[in-house]
Length: 99
Image 1 (cartoon, rainbow, N blue to C red):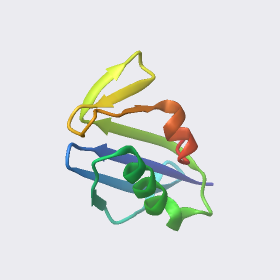
Image 2 (image 1 turned 135 degrees about the vertical axis):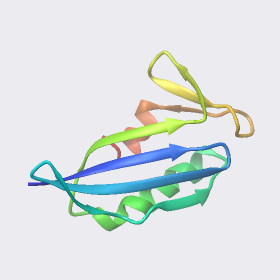
Image 3 (image 1 turned 45 degrees about the vertical axis):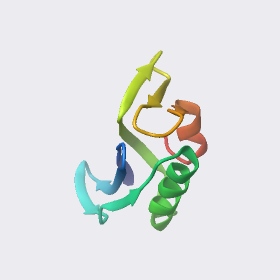
């Protein structure tokens, strides 16, 4: 059974995302590294959704996200390098299609 794992680096200026298809506990395929200049929450949502749209036949199983910001209550993060320091929550990530 194939599984989709997603890695995301949400930086202060650039954000990166890469998908891996795992089969039999081995990396079967890696996507290209998606990269975009992002500075707000809406742009991040669109970036994530457009990057994973090529994998609609697979449900994301695991995801790791690194943020340029402080984690609050293990449930959300304030992105310190963006204007107005928006807060992104686990709920936001789930709404955007992440596990």
